[in-house]
Image 1 (cartoon, rainbow, N blue to C red):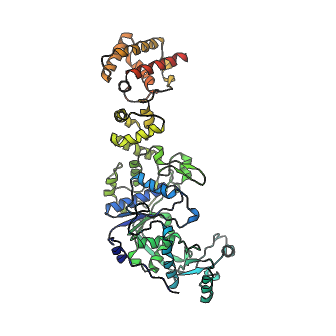
Image 2: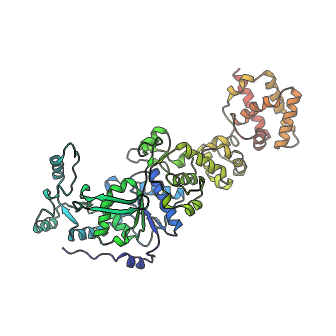
Image 3: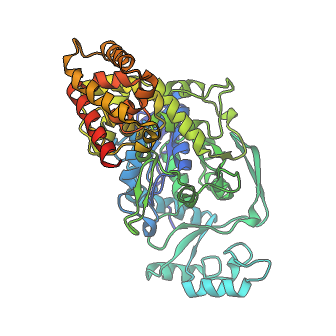
Length: 530
């Protein structure tokens, strides 16, 4: 059987594409099967930081070879998440690039030639087994110590494949279009190893690995073949992925070897897991649902189940904080710093400081990061997001006033959504008041005092914080009431509760007419509930 013409080797391919073969090129290669999980965000980030630090390229490749798990909208969701986080790829389905297409489903014609090349050289074989035959194999070989038998070196010679059939039988089946897959032929007893950038030397025994399918019956490659072929053809120099992919490493190592590309194989790094808050086991969506915190970058609504999973963005996190906290989930720069901008992360990032062990996710710490970023951010940075939060809550904010209000309240906000409570009353009068905080010390004398003081506000010579405060204290002294006993009721009148910046600043900001109106409305509410 003749092998189709191969693509040029990497140095020539790089030349033809205008690429520097020595340039760092990394990729994030998600499957469009759902939302972007915490672990995925961190993988994106570490790829991005490594590329930027080394002046390299960051590629987004969509691995959609498993069409049975494809979820409509997931690809766009992933790209939107990266855009929100500020981690824009240099090459992608959207941006294009010299080695596209960047969706594996659009590269289907590329893969068969390499699968067939492996068959020709005896590193893979055609397997014609039906579903019934595969199930029969599992039944025959299932034991208490081996409850899930694999298609491996121990069973392949008893199956229907090109190792057990004659060449004439194989040729006829192929000519007749009999459904088949192509499987890698794993060595029976070899030790293979590679140097992981995080874990050092890692070894595997090939006899423990099954003969993975490389090309499916529909002609689509599996992840194992596609990731190797695409990493080679796209000139990937470093491949970072979760440690759950370590068991697949022997298959990928052998494919790089069998295809003659070992010299161009990227350096690998298998990232540690992100663990549950208690440190026991990998963090999952169910843990987030159970404990009430997000595990996705943005809200994800599964079109199949219509189930909504909350994301960091919608919960009120700033992207800067999300990037910052993800960077420190298993890495630090050794300085003890915690608040770091994307530029600082790019300059300080190094693979040798990634921990081998899993990192516990702490939601309280995540909120602390966000609070710190809110406090440190300039008003102009916060303004559009705060305005959007207010609009979502049905509050139309005057932007000029909002610019003045944000610095007054931002240190009181942990999440962006907190700005609704902390700024909303500047633009919309409260409709409910914390009357129970006022009632225990409320007296007819205070009722009369506020009625009189509100009536006189119109005659103040100026409407500013010093003037309002001075008049308030003078009136309190004239009425024989301590100012401190009147300030809490005034705050509740203007705000609705016991929070906010200095109360006279609030009054100055909302205006004389609105201040007077709010005082009178709560006085009426107090009277009606006596």
